[in-house]
Length: 576
DNA sequence: GCCGTTTTCGGCCCGACTGTTTTCAGTCG
Figure 1 (cartoon, rainbow, N blue to C red):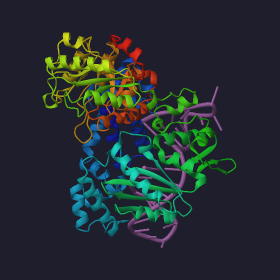
Figure 2 (figure 1 turned 45 degrees about the vertical axis):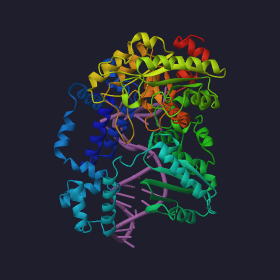
Figure 3 (figure 1 turned 90 degrees about the vertical axis):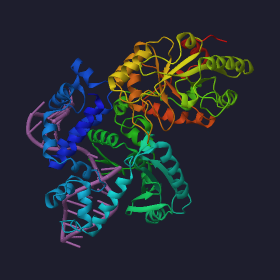
Figure 4 (figure 1 turned 135 degrees about the vertical axis):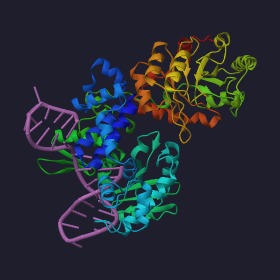
């Protein structure tokens, strides 16, 4: 079992315990452990061998024994026993917005409701409203939530790029209101998470109620979920859940910090504040001894008061950033200006829309020193992959183009298929003639974990391979990552000195933040590439950088922050 | 279930909104 699978079992266990009415602190221990495990840089099975599982914060003797049991048997006894006690559909009911463990249990005990469909029927037959603390409105709310849940295959999550555009549309509109002085994006969108569950906004206003009714009165509001005197929640066209929090100017810093989260980061800060004799909330810091509230108009001041350096929103996941700041060991996160070139770009020789020349010009405009044109290999027939003969012509065409440009070096490359058996699509003789070899898995995505892992590791043993593109193959809304043992892949990349890509396509973002951070921790170099198919895609680099920053990546961790000279030396490319 | 340079027991982050109440439990972020 890998860390993700173990974390999921703990999360499931927590929900079941919550339903059973166990102590909230016990259930929280499971969810805390699950979250920490998801963010680990090392596989639990490795930590187990080293005997260091108990060093993981939030994992004590009991959870450790359950982890070991899972590593050995794939499950743990307490989990299986609890599964037997609780109908499977209950957890799904608890995932309906507005229904928690208490309400789910009420329905189960009083109405015998075990599935979402049974709940839906009970609501339609007006059996809900007869229960204590329930009424007509609750029934309607439940039915609406169920409908939304069923329509929504992505579980309410949207790719960052879509959420960002919607947020921009809304903030532009709010900016027009005379009651709103300033609007800012907060939440996971500000932390640049790869997918976003809801859009969180904050607005400064001296007339909060008017600001809120302006917000809830937008044309594209499909449903008002709640609307109070300081906050409101809506469903916006396109099934976007949007929250607005209205604040006064003097608490803006506190509110922005609070509403940016993450929740776990905030909890950590509050504990830190408590240890210093303060109680932290979204309005400021309460001095426990004097009862006086210290307000913050900026986030910087808040972090400073806690004895921390400013933490970029991308870092605020409680993955060690608070400790790093206390020890003054925060990373110098990579920025757009550090990028010197793009090493994964397609031309119209395969499935790109632009000529090599247009790509070169676009790269020059962006201030790049080099660009690698990496068209598909012949196995990817649907993408017009290059035959051996066309690959040789491709190399010649790039040579000619290089004669034309002084400002940029065009590297001849390929995005070469790793075939089902791990062999590459071109012979070594051909690969040797290229400046750069990017490899990727495009077909046979259903292979089992063992086969897929072996396939990739085998490819890494080829000396000509430089970079692996989109290492897990995920595409939002289309397919999950293929089943692969990333620990082994990362180790093989390290052993064979291969570079792993952070693919910047907003539909891929692969490696994701967690895997990229692991790769870094293992000393594997990364490349942030766009996989451009039309020149506009070159600007997707922004999304790759977001992911890299979330992974604590610094310029030195990234291949394409190197100058042309450095990269030629590293990849053994002839100078001219 | 975890955790501890004040603790191995007694804590465990904090506040807003809703729907049902008549003072608050449940849920959420």
